[in-house]
Length: 426
Image (cartoon, rainbow, N blue to C red; front, side):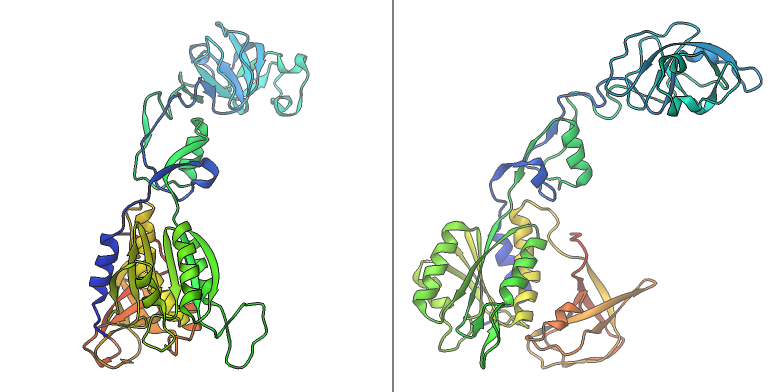
């Protein structure tokens, strides 16, 4: 098998990756998606001057001399709560009782906190919070301190102005962005859509996961681990089941998946065994081979094809090899298809805690646990590294890359590590 390098394989894959066509998404479904067009506000947010807290709307000049020792009396002429329209103006010597979020009445230019007022009888304004009677809410008050004009008033348009570009194309939507879009009245938004990713596992040895084990059989774990990785990447997994070890069975499922999905992942059947039909079937249906075979372990028989505007990955059948190959090659492509600008997990230089031995010739991708101590990343193997030992991935928060030419990397050596539990940063 003629193998290419990890770097060449990744470059060839991403060269074929372009964002999928943009489409409208319901706002509830847009979290984590990338905007395909700028968002320009049609409204001011807030759309009216409103109170930042419970208190009294006043003219600041009226209470400029107020102190606890020399309070200023004010006549309460109205009451306004959130959702109301202030039906009375504030004139000199007057106040309007106001709740958080309520419109500031005409004539008022500040809101004094309820805690900074008292009744003329010298009682604290507990009734403000607990009473609902009109005679109570409109009884005169004493202002106990001065406040400047504008205090506790949220001005119309102080957050967003009409015609302002508030979010830009290429931006990934987070929870705050979703809230802003909701406040601006956007029930739908133009985004790059999520790819649909088909998962087809191959092999007569596979059982569905609810079936009891039989001699020579294994459960179809790859369909579930890959679907979980697809979801974690932000795409939509579509499981098509198990293809039996015949070309006809594989061809039927491949054709169906390529008619319905943007990306096809197959597992197993891509090596050189007598029943490894995947490469032949893909050639028969017209898929164009980009490469087959990467100088790495695990994942040596990884293959990548294109079919029209579709992407096809022939992943190895061993669970760890399939997951590592997804992490390093499929995930970056899916992010590019979704318009993401950051494609790759953080890459750091780690220090090996223990010796690592291997055969020279291929890059070994070791599953490791990473501990940061000061400025250093200490990395150690998760244990046995066989490509069928799924617990080596369960325990891992990093992948360490041991250079192809080396046979031994002693403890203390520096090694490149991809932090697979961290979000992409480049």
